[in-house]
Image 1 (cartoon, helix red, strand yellow):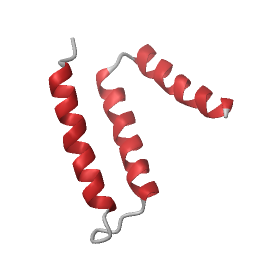
Image 2 (cartoon, one colour):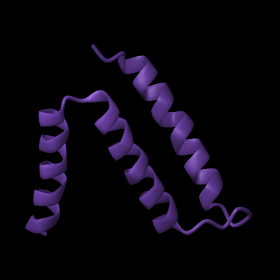
Image 3 (cartoon, helix red, strand yellow):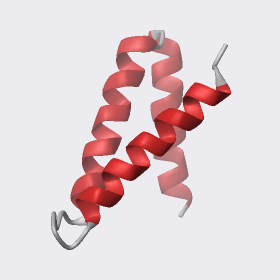
Length: 68
């Protein structure tokens, strides 16, 4: 079961780092960051999920993109 407090904490830590990277001082392009975050999410899903669940997640992403 997911611990909501830890999930919220992780979200805030990552959000803070992303905001820091998007600042004028660091100057990263938002699409660079989004691409890296998506790639990391896919890598994590692949290492933690069953093959079927991973395929289902990938199908969900691709079908959502096709709907737009």
